[in-house]
Length: 234
Image (tube, rainbow, N blue to C red):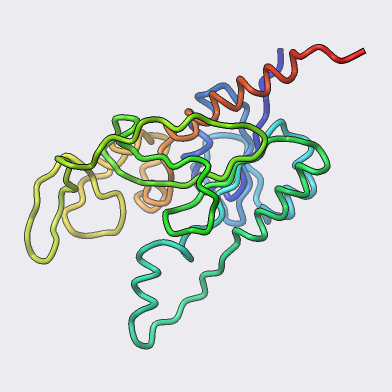
């Protein structure tokens, strides 16, 4: 039996891809920028155009539109006098292309983004739900199936290690972002996120933990397998 195929659009270096692969999918990535550390088949190109042209070739599609427009750092910077940026919100465009694909093919789709983004919160995941050493909250807008929400442990008793306001804090959680502040080694970041196919800090910082998409991918694969095995009505 062939492996189900999932398209990983706006794939970056492959954090989401690794989770889907671990769940049992054949993964194909597409991104506008070169991704030399992407661990699976990769195509360079516009993700929206690629979904329109090739989405029907896959059993499912995942997209992670660039998150910088909605992230907390950008929101804070926009309150600073004289600050300008070129970040745009690609979520409406991504939502539209996924809707077109579902109308044509019925394939299930997943869209992921940061807290503060204008996604439907069908699923909200935190690293503590998977015994990771990052909080890394992410929203998922899921169409075509329902994915169980895992328990979200309290953050109480957990603290991110690093320098803040001139004070060095100890903690059990790792700050996987930025360049300074005593945020730990590359190995610390890899272990905290569960990502070991790249050692580039920027790529790790921009990724989601593979545990998130392994959780989604397990449910997605079960859904697709059941749908494929269902008897055809006479």
